Length: 94
Image (tube, rainbow, N blue to C red; front, side):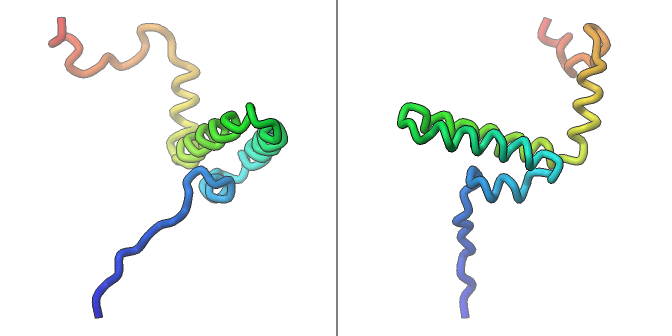
């Protein structure tokens, strides 16, 4: 008996997949945006906007599901010019 390769046929931009990855507190925001874009997509010229929305929410779902996201967001919002860690090796470029 030989092992068969596993094929993942899931589409990462499928709304159900986005909801699966997205933390629950973001579900209503996603669904509001999705339903508005879906309604607009009935007009042919807006179809691309639906695809873009799904792509953006897929990326958000990855970020928002990262346990470090909230802490990183808070740190970034408190950062002031000159308070950050310089890029390692930056002085070597001068």
